[in-house]
Length: 356
Image 1 (cartoon, rainbow, N blue to C red):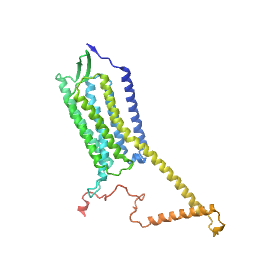
Image 2: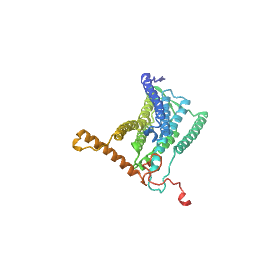
Image 3: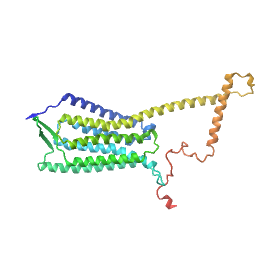
C-alpha cells in the first residue's frame, strides 16, 4: 500500500503567506487601538473592530491546522477555531449593522440608543452559546470514539494511494446551517438600513463583506457536499487557504481599506481648515493693529483698496456669525454647539410619555 507524499514547497509557501496574514492582523489590532480617537475609528466602534480582527485571526488558525496530518485532536480542534472565529467576526459585523438600523429606523416614536457595552454583551452571549454547542459536539464525538467509531479515515482510492482525512459528520451540516443563518441576519440588517445616511459609507462596506463570505463559503460547502471525494492533504490545505483568503481576509480589506482612504481625506480637510483659520486670525490682527484714518479713495492704490476690502469682508463674516448664533433656538447650547446629524427623534426613555 502506498502513501501519497506531500508537496513540501507548495505547503510551506502557503503556510508562510498565512503566517504573514496573521502577523498583519496583529499589527492592525495595535493600529486600531492606537488610533481609536481618530474620526473614522471612533465613529465605527473600535472595540467591535478589534473583535472582528481577533475573529479573523482565529479563522486563520483553523487553516494552519490543515497543514498537519489529520489526527483525532486536530479533527476535534478544527471546528472550535472555525466556529468561534466565525461567530466573533461576522457576529460583530451583524451587531454593527444592527446598531445602524436601530439608529435610523423611522417607524418608532422613540429613538433608542445602543451603547458599546450592550453590543459587547450581545457578542459575548453568542460566543457562550457557540462554546456550549461545541462542548456538546466534542463530548458526543468522544463518546462515539470510545465505542469504536473512528473520527479519522484512512481511505484507499483506485490509484493505490492511501489518503488520511477527518471523517465527515452530520454535525458539519448543522454548523453550516448556523453560519448561513448568521449571514442571512446580517444581510437583512444591511438591506433594511440601505437608505440610512452613515458617515464614511460604513454600512455599504459591511454589507459587501457579508456578501463575499456568503458567496465563497456557499460555493465551498456545495462542492464538498455534492462531491464527497476523499482529497489528498495538499488539496484540502489549498482549498482551506483559498477559502480563508477569499472570505475573512477579503472582508477585512473591504472594511478597513475605505477607512484608511477616508482618514486621509479627513486629515487633508483639517489641514486646509487650519490654514484658513490661521489666515483669518492674521487678518483680524492686522485689522486691530491698523490705524484707521480717513483716506481719499483717489489717493489709494489698487493694492490698498484690495486690502481694505478683504478686511471689510472678514469683519462682515464675523458679524454675520455672531448674529446667526445669537438667540437662535435651533442651535444647541451643549458642548460644541452641534447636534448629531442622524437624530430625528427625541432621546426619551421608553415609557416616559406614560409617566407624564
